[in-house]
Length: 391
Ligand code: MG
Image (tube, rainbow, N blue to C red; front, side, top):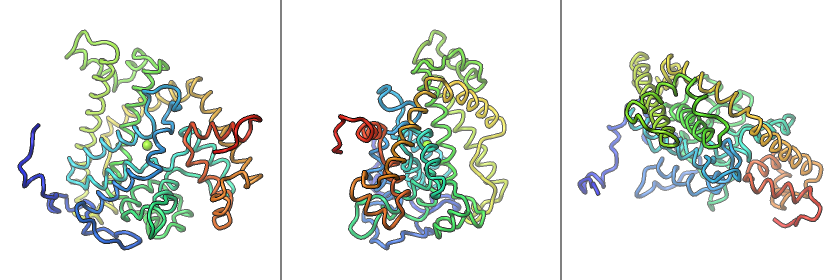
């Protein structure tokens, strides 16, 4: 194994290695509840570790990305999606001399608030909550790390660093931002998030576009012939075949997808470096007041749009996917209505918090926290005579 000299292994990255516009512990707004500094890690490493150890993170293993968890063992789940996002985000952050620990923490946490059954589940829960403040998975991710995780004696939630929490809160309507205090303030002041947070948004997009192509091909719902109509893929299929003329099947797909990811990351790095220079960025405050700095070139953006449109029409709206999402919506709506009509169907601890938080919000927390398979089981227990009632 290739090893670095001992001194290099031990030394922590010096602050001077970070760009002057990166988030660092020195400029951080810290944690809501004061805690002693970690002895062997940085503060943002500690955040990442707290996220990895959380219950909500483990639940991602059984939550849908596009394909429901029981449809096949090789499709992405929310967990593997989050790990792929973290990998891409971390690589980009490091290449730009930004805080890669913070970037990784945000990426690993970005989907913690997702409901079971992917976007169909979130849309259904949002409809159920329409008169009770709505439901949005970003806000729910923040709610989980701020309040719902029960792990520490001294506080609710994970008590993460301000910048990690701010990065998780990707979008937020001004009305909601007012209730969130300091972490929502940038939406009221029209300030941009840190570059570390901006990277996570784009890494999310790179990850899901590419792995949805891979999963779509694996499922047979889309074909390589269809994909060859999409310029971004056509170009990289050609390049893969130039290098390996006889390549077919899964190896051709992987050789193509890895080239597309590489092309997108490279394009994003070049474009972002240019925007940082063009906007004369020197400090974190400059980042907050500049237009979005992390992004693709116009050409890559156009190709990306073409790919997204293709995925929407051919994969996300494929009748087999629609059948699944339709069923998923019904499961969520049925459960919500049943719990709202009779809150005593909820586990006792949820009934108790309903008194403080309002029953609809607590029902939304309960439903959002279910995994796909637990939601299906819970639905059967609520509606099928002869099913067991115990959890
Ligand atoms: Mg995501």
